[in-house]
Length: 224
Image 1 (cartoon, rainbow, N blue to C red):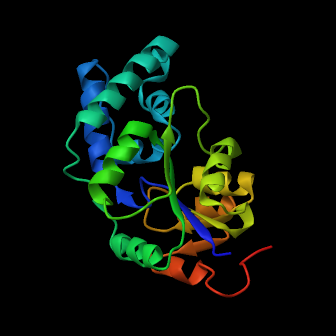
Image 2: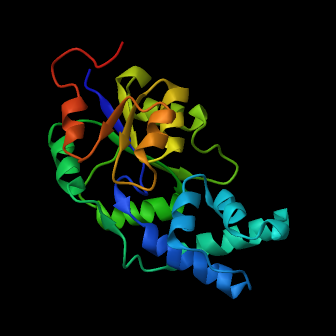
Image 3: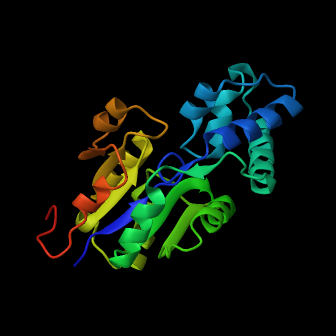
């Protein structure tokens, strides 16, 4: 059995930070909230829109109603926003094409809203066949819950121990650990490598092509 690969999206396959930053600050400003720096937005991304809002609005303003209101506005605005600053990281297209040529099953697992995840994948990776694109849906679990992984593994027809979870955040590494997958951290994303290692990264890669070395093709699996 070949290894399958599950990819995170923001900070792993796509550089999306500046578009997220523009949308978030636009919504904050329109609601009379202070704008945030790009580093503050970078560190808030990854645990869903509601958590991003909680981390970015003034602590004395946090209410369930306000978080829900701003989160809905961010989701709607981002979906309608032209992703003019978003782009695949260098080497990602080549990697995905190579994996596809070698018939390695691939999926996307992200805490981005489902509609937005499908939109950007269709824009930037229209020639790539992902077995599954999994974003956040209302009422469903999100990373790092292993519940998010089970249906993905079923669609990929693979076992956790033969599956690479590739991501740029502590959330991705926690997801891999919780589900028993192989945790692969990327150094080019939104989090520091030290944080990825603290959260269980088994491998740190500095370029997309290094993933090819971790994919089993005709030899023993990386891990039983």
